[in-house]
Length: 238
Image (cartoon, rainbow, N blue to C red):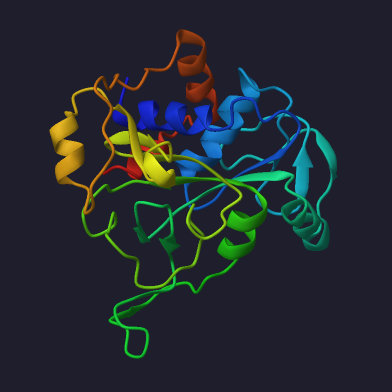
């Protein structure tokens, strides 16, 4: 078992209970694997796609084409799902604050930013209309900040629809703290609560007892070996 395996399972757990809803992982192997792992094991009703425009009837390995295609998902239909709350997306973030406001647009002052990033893209619509979770591979105070430089995705204090989970290389978090603030749910094996607190640039809600993030079951480990035979998930934590 590796930290990447633990992270994939933790991300997959964010989709538990979703039922027949489009599960979308954005930004890397771990989020895509999470949706496919959930569908292959404890959440078989999830709808998954090939990353472009095909709804998949099977769950192919990373990089492989599906053998069974259930339907076509053109962009207009994808947007209909977003606007009607039928999509749970797992996004990334360059900055995130205690309420879950995220920034993928620019770092620094708006008038003269130090770095130009992606723009807001679909973050406002996703966070306002759909369940949203986050995968952040490097948990540092530069990412977990007191105030984001630009609000791209909405937080609990700005009308977010349903912020579920934040999974990082250190821990799992949610927004069950006072006033919808970020709360520590579990730490990954070998990571202490103190390490997570030190890597967070704001006051994090920490329960009295914090469990360890669960490891993959034997079944899940076997599924991961099939879905990611080249170990692409490991590269996101290098």
